[in-house]
Length: 265
Image (cartoon, rainbow, N blue to C red; front, side, top):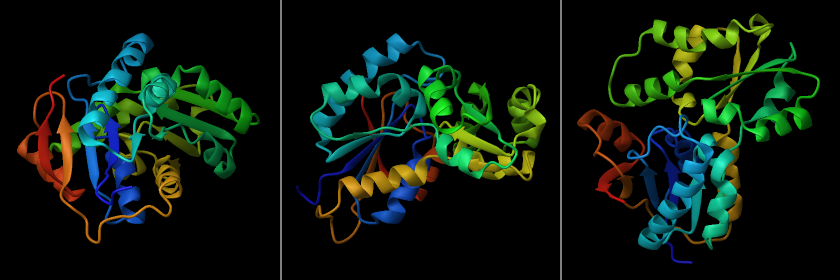
């Protein structure tokens, strides 16, 4: 394994940065390629068939070009729909992202848990299975919010986020039966931890759980004993659609992504 072989993070947009951050904290000098499928964004409103066809082909081309040591699908929607398809298409390890229902159930005192994700993620049978296995004694309230995805993208692009936008996006979850009893919310979209400050203001006293730290631990485990560079090299952000704005480029740089590459499929 070459020390220069990168970790490849993949998402429809900037949500995967919430997974990249914890990984950087564990493996500080890891070479990184971050792929934002901006030409396919947003994933949450696409059909399962569209994603199951798109992702293996696109990631296959990315692996051919960048030769990563592993791929991280840092997107709940993509993982719950296309993870098996991608693993079948690639010959390197692929780490997926799943809703953190198990740790949320362990934390909840009211036994009422929210699962906040995209429309595509919250409707998946996989979420039913996780709820049955790890939160059978809980009321699990789901809400798919494409608006929060757009808000997270806007925040990193430098736009001001008003509290009303957050409150409007989460109100349908809280208006459901027993919604006022929610004490723990699973952020089942990697975009949403990027809004943790705004969400905490909108729902004081609620505990938010996301999969980023667990995924980082998994990456560290899979790469244990592998060589890394002595210092972090310049890391790359790849956009399949329009290049990022100057404000978004500045946000990417804060995560160490200082080289912007366009990739048109």
